[in-house]
Image (cartoon, rainbow, N blue to C red):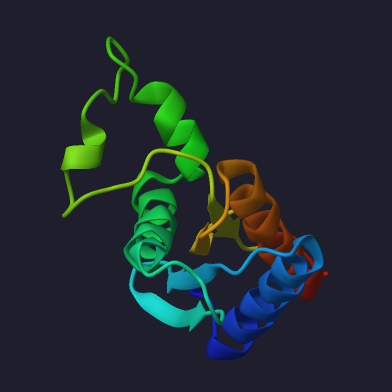
Length: 137
């Protein structure tokens, strides 16, 4: 089942709280199981260039069925997914996009975060993903 609006709101809010805790304004995108935007949040002073990146991180995770950082590992020169970032209107192959799966392991959507350093984006996205897991329990 695809992610609901209520779930997307709770995911984004958990991510926003984490971003505030670490002091980095970010853009947060939550997509449904078809990689369509369900919810987008731009914190005050978040980088404008990161709007598109956050959306593409979420879409990348959903379309590829794995976190965006994992796509990055497979898309290096000589790798099985080399140049995949040039497909689907542009994908992002570095961390900050996390796949969201339901309790049966099916894709419900994904979260994408951008605006800080890669490790910060990943930590914020992970907070959102953890909130989704908590909703399923």
